[in-house]
Length: 91
Image (cartoon, rainbow, N blue to C red; front, side):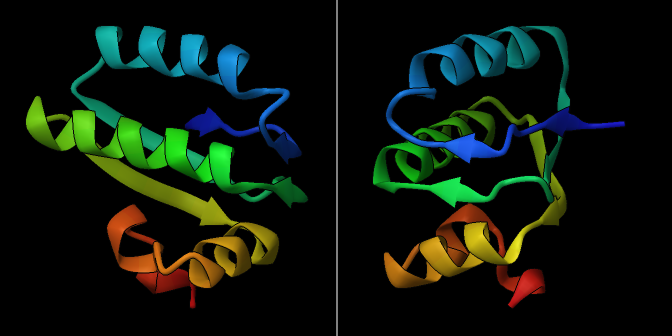
């Protein structure tokens, strides 16, 4: 099992997701992100994921994707964040 992203990854869910991610990062040295259910995503949601991924990198926490929906990948691609978010395997 991994860290399950909800179906909406948008500005209205960012604060809730931030708290969940912070808790996860404090408890683990590995994080497995499941983005298969994401059906709506905006720039603020992607920005939060990118920040969390950068925190992981800086703190030597392993960040790995378990899955990513086509909507998540498409939004990341539109903003040029595929490589930065580590989503290249899903393109």
